[in-house]
Length: 508
Image (cartoon, rainbow, N blue to C red):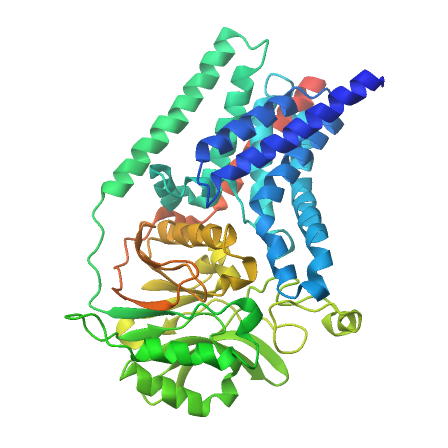
């Protein structure tokens, strides 16, 4: 390869990486989904022009590095909570996370190049990329954060998630971007371009019609139940500090006891965020009595650590008006390296431990998804922090909930991109399952989300306070809540197998 060719290769690689960063700007808090389409389409143009599978794989990998590097930039934040100890790890963590996730994109592009002839390579690329995104939600316990479908949360197209989920929206986004790339390619015949244009119009217009129709259906009436969401705004570097931790508990007790606005009823249920109490549940006997008195007859649902036979759990506990524990829920989908790490006791010798765990070197996983009977407020499906990212955990519950509770502490991840992206995913869970989501966050954004994913009321990021709101009603069971991602997985698998058979037959 000549020096001139090497420079051209480097320029192409850098351009594709930059396009990945542009595509990431569709995610919150930027919310420019058009840039996601443009960035992906322009990068796919280069991928489709690749001379061989190796080049296609490299270009798609570089695209993924740029895309995930920008989307997941918040990953550096936990390392600066204790900068002296962990700060040096931040750039390595972000790069290796982005590069690791991008491997799936690179592998899918390389496979697409092998599966189909140049005429149908656009289709194989759309299928393999969509399949890679689906696999990303499952591999090594899964990490579907940053799926391209999430960029549509503030548009009419978000309502399509009630049929195909956020994953299906992501597949449609990838397909549309590939169609745009192939349409722009030199050498495409008029017939090919007409076919591509027709498919694109069907996607855009058809999705808009379905979304508008879904959004115009009347929502059920609110339930005659008032919830109080308590947001203490405890910065992570002070949250567990012995000199400050109980100041935030006192703040939550004051918010719990506060009188409602004139003419408004007292809350029927008070909810505190994840790990709102900085001690083990077994050591809260006196504190629970104070909490119950502050709630003035309403039960309190709060985040706390729970110990059991030398195992520790990230939990939610529900106490009655006397302060007695009525039910608990233990988080079961833990954050790898955040709440647990393999060989945690051994690695602690080298100063490596789970960031979020305050007891031992990591939490233990709870038995699985379950419902909590909250009394007047009905059956709630609790999700703690990271669990709201996984629709499959909601599908695992044998009975349908009346509402979803998302208790979280996003203070670990700064005050810019991550809390907004996390909120967007909670809104998608509401749309997918037709259930209201009540989100209670330590530093924000706490929110009441109706069954269409719309924000009824919010407490801003970085604000201490409380929010009294009626509990929105649940919508009808959605197609996605019955079938999940299975139709998408089957469609991708069958289509890829068809392309493979066609390739093999033609090769004979």
